Image (cartoon, rainbow, N blue to C red; front, side):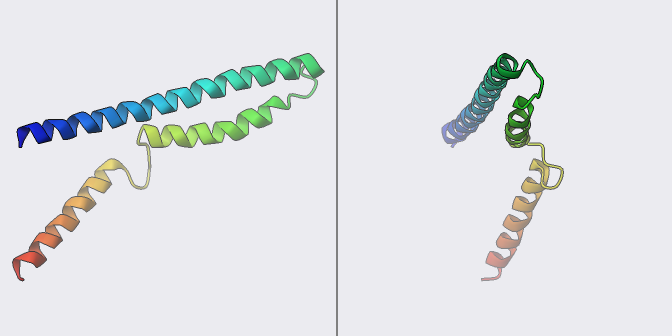
Length: 100
């Protein structure tokens, strides 16, 4: 039982590290490409019209939502809410099984 519990904890920690790694890779690629696009923009128009900001903004929205998911920031359904609901449903299940 203890070994199984530790294996589950290890797997959850490993999954969390993978999730963080994916986010930081996404953020790094985003920053590299925005700088690259800014360089192209400067080279072509000298920042007369900063079109690279449109790409930065659009992709930035995706990075923002990825960050919310990765760092588990959700103003509506946070982790505590999920855990409470899971316990509530398990308790209801246990009560109905008791009467069968």
